[in-house]
Length: 178
Image 1 (spheres, rainbow, N blue to C red):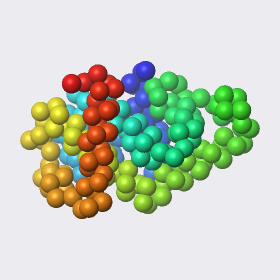
Image 2 (image 1 turned 120 degrees about the vertical axis):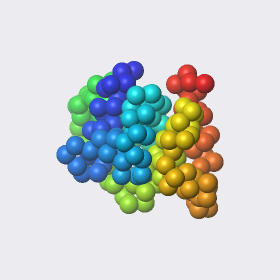
Image 3 (image 1 turned 180 degrees about the horizontal axis):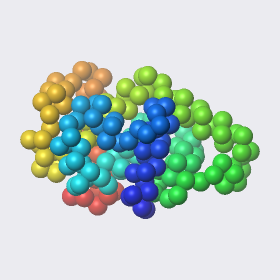
Image 4 (image 1 turned 90 degrees about the vertical axis):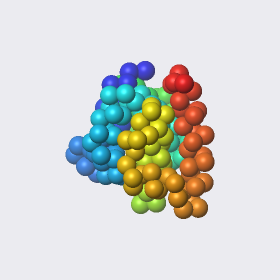
């Protein structure tokens, strides 16, 4: 897996989801409350963990009911670290028409653009990044806003926190981190 390719792919995917010409992971992290020091720490020390967390969240929280759709999106954008694949190539692999692959891609993007899904995605990323920073002995770098939210989450957020601490441990183990 090529981490540089994966980050480029995640940026491209975020640009499509947020309907922006140049949305980057750093822009998302800034928008959800992380300052430049946090973002730089992630970029320099934890980028593979962040990429793993993004993928895990997308697969298990955004597309949990449709692994095939997640696979299609991962291949189309190169989210798995491989080069992005064309509609034609994906249509051959899935034995679907090129048009159907395009329709499924649009369906997935619409789902990701839904306000409820975006809020859920952003909250989950916020928790995952806070956990990454804490795991990297960066607990003091977590902003007071992020720490406050993690210390007194709503009921909905509490359920996500429990799930994502477990999910984050899976991602960390998959990436070979201790």
